[in-house]
Image (cartoon, rainbow, N blue to C red; front, side, top):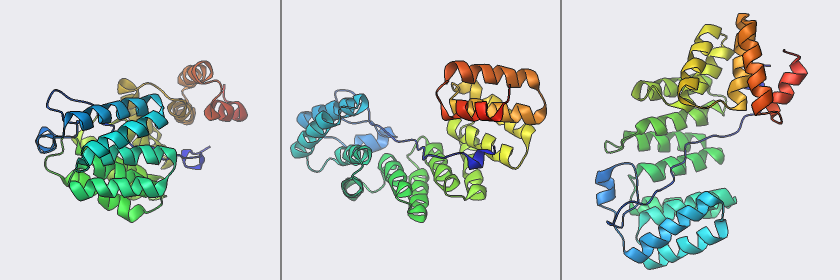
Length: 260
């Protein structure tokens, strides 16, 4: 079954803040941007706690601490960025967008917020807005990892049936950083669907050098090697998929395909 026919989900590289040092600052993409964003100890401490609770999936506690951070410093943009992410996870689109816009109103060139807002826009099917937002993030000369935003633009377009435009972004991202795993696996899928199986194999080999296999990447490997006639490689991928992800959708597809 071609990869394009498999059920696709939006996968974006969301920027989750991490606490920094005694400067009471929150990590974003570049030290120069961070230097202009300071806050008081109460806001910083509660923001850090909110982030940690989010990582643990304790969203109620996360919200309580983020609200305390906002009360302690209503003008601190990173708090609204993280609130936007939290409401995005909670499925409240209006509050997510309100907070992302508030963050950008305070710091309209912050690449982290632009990345997260772009992902939100894409999930809301506002594709043109999302693409522009990702590109604005990448264009920031102070952004140390523009390949993240460019990959996100590619992911958004790819999942909205704009494969040619997406491929262009994935290639750009890989020129900036040859180890962008999401760009590699998508280029593998694109090559497979063309079909260009040798190119697909090469991208998958690059991907597995830097990332752990997922059920999806193993299923992709099975299909590529089946097309190329390498039964030993097929058997190896089959064994990994069955042993590592026995309950996955891809394992079901494997059983239905009768590939051994």
